[in-house]
Length: 238
Ligand SMILES: Nc1ncnc2c1ncn2[C@@H]1O[C@H](COP(=O)(O)OP(=O)(O)OP(=O)(O)O)[C@@H](O)[C@H]1O
Image 1 (cartoon, protein in one colour):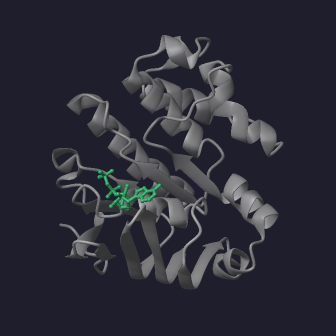
Image 2 (image 1 turned 45 degrees about the vertical axis):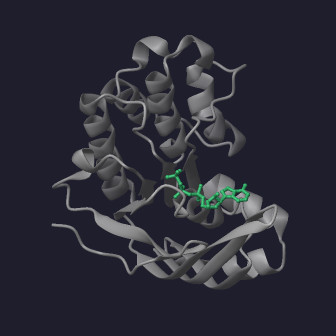
Image 3 (image 1 turned 90 degrees about the vertical axis):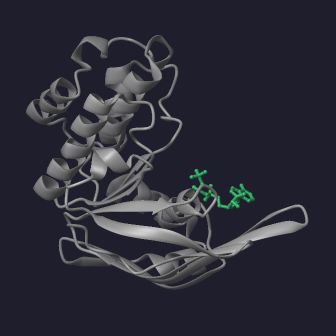
């Protein structure tokens, strides 16, 4: 379960600035939230703040509840507890960046398994095999990222982001380089894995066709002025 109240930041580039505000968000474990909004409205900024890689200017509360264990992330952010935040990120978060973010010197297999290795957790081989077969990258496991297409890297990057069963998955346009068939497959897998492993997922996407009729929750960024945006309350989707 994810609970956030009054999370905001003002980003500046030279003389201009842009403010992004999330007044309130509650998402249950296992639910998938789709983040939508115009280009530049603050979707990636929100993911970076929730992902604890961008420090907000203001935060009232941010709690992540994992197996009845309530983690008060807002207090850690306010107190600049960098090491504790890094541990929480490594253990409980899965981050799928727009650029893929695979390490060039590791094979695809080692990239996918890196988080488990760092956390000293055992590999669940049947889950690993299931995920790589489902996204059709089994034949690419011994290759390096630069030998793969962008779409293939995107699929590998997704598996890497969920292999350690995070409590919170943050994905920035995970299907941007995929054809409609593979985009649909990936979204269905996100929903399936979220439900199966109680992962709260927040996914930025412009792929409206892909998410139609999947019954996902929507969080929309609305421009409130040329220099600011605010996220509306979470909406149910039929
Ligand atoms: N590193 C940065 N420094 C300063 N301002 C930034 C930075 N990154 C983004 N911004 C500004 O913050 C605002 C929100 O950007 P953000 O990337 O979060 O939007 P977005 O909704 O994800 O856009 P897109 O759909 O185009 O990826 C924009 O006005 C952008 O110019």
